Image (tube, rainbow, N blue to C red; front, side):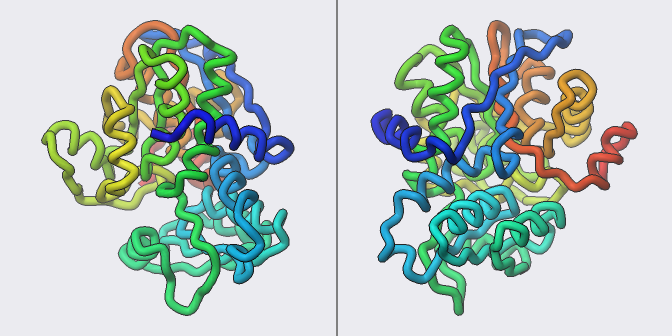
Length: 315
C-alpha cells in the first residue's frame, strides 16, 4: 500500500503537469450508476503522465545524468518522454514489436528514442530494469513507488468529486494504476470496493484469484495493448492483492462494445485498456450503486477504432 502522504505529495509535484480530469455521469441502462474518470484528457491522452511525471520530476540531476529508460507498450513511454523533455534529458523507450504505431509515433513527437524488440525481450527488460547498451535511470512503468503515488492522485480526485462511491473499477496491466488508486481510496474510504479488469487474452489476476496461488497464463497480444500480461509482478502484487476485492477477465467483443458506447454516448475515444472498466460495469461485475470507471487512455490506432465503430471486433 502506498502511503497517503506520498500520494498527496505527488499531487503537489504534478501541479501544472497533470490536469485534474473530470468525473462525468454516463447515462446508460446498466446495473449501476456509472461515472467516468476521463484520463483520456491528460496531455499524453492517458493517466501515465501522473506516474511518469512524479518519478522523473522528483529524480535528482545525478540520477538523470544519462537520461531515462523505460519499457512500455506506449502510454508510459509517452509519459516518460514528456517528463524527460521537461527535465531536458534524453529518453529511450523499449517497446514490444506489437506496439501500436499510433503510440510509437507519439513517442517520437515527444523526442523519445524507440527500440522495438520481441515481446519476450521486452518482458525481460521490464523485469530486470536493464537494456544492453543503454544507460539512464530506469523508470519502471509499474513497480516504482513514485509512479504508483502519482497514479494515486486519481483516487484523491474521484473521492473529492464522489465521496460516497461504492465501487472503483480499474484496468489492470502490471498493477501500478490499481495499487495507486486503491491505496488512496482504501485509506480514505475503506468500504469502497476495488475491482480489477483484464482482457481475456492475458488475465493473471483473475487466474490467481481463482487458483488461490500466483498463476501465470498464456498471453496473446491483441489490440488491447495497454493491459493484460502473462504473469504478475511480484512486489506490485503484494500491494494490489491486499487492496482489490475482485477481478474479471473481459472478452474482446465486450471491450469493443464498450469503446463504441463511449464514442456514441459520451463522445469519448478510448483505447482497449481504457474501456475495460466500463465493460465490467456494463456486465454487472462492479455490482450496484455508484461506480467509477477509470477510462485510463485514448491512444488507439485509427484503423482499429474504425473497425470497432463499424461494429466489428479487430483481429
